[in-house]
Length: 277
Image 1 (cartoon, one colour):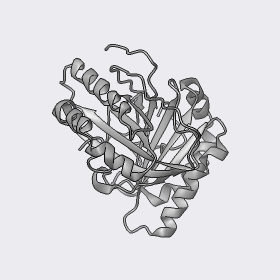
Image 2 (cartoon, rainbow, N blue to C red; image 1 turned 135 degrees about the vertical axis):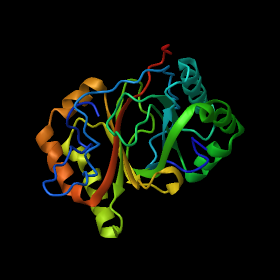
Image 3 (spheres, rainbow, N blue to C red; image 1 turned 90 degrees about the vertical axis):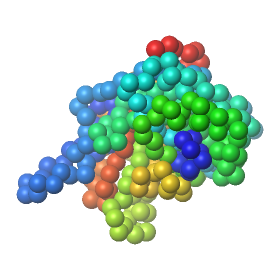
Image 4 (cartoon, helix red, strand yellow; image 1 turned 180 degrees about the vertical axis):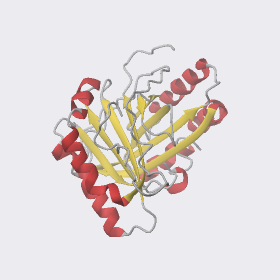
């Protein structure tokens, strides 16, 4: 199931959690990172619906992140992609959902795993995510709107601890990163990568919020086990954030040899109005 039945959980030539092409002088095998650097950008347009903004008494110390990336078939009528976004966005009204947004990916930098749309939602607990997954409205949206037009899917879940506000304001820019550890990696390697990921916010003060953690739902994660979301005020801040290649490269170098794959994309939380294709 796209949005929870199986657990789930970019803009310029350099960014903090996308990895540039590595050169190999002796091996004919391509580097696992060669596909995660695009000098150009890709924009994917579709209808954008208002995200859920639910008021709460305060910010919980931790919550559940649920991110689904999916690829709409290239020959699909744009109105069907619009219907997917609108119907996914309607699930924000479910009681178990703290925050939900759905819309097109702004920019993607993976040539091996390319996605056109994203759903991001947050829950107070794993049981609330279970309730969302099993809710008849969710099942109906996935069955009637999503499955018929999707070519590929990837989903990751993790526990966000100390990330800050549950709600992300419309217009915010999100950098979503999924990391795949090398086969045979142990706890030391995993914890080192998590430590570097968690330290990103200190190195880049433009990040308003950083959520990261270990995926607890491997079913549709394609082997990616560490995920993060960096939230900035908007696309302009994302551009400025990307304009620090030296600092970015230092962070990448700390974990590069421990990874077999990276998926990085940018997403903008949709504005209140709905935009047509």
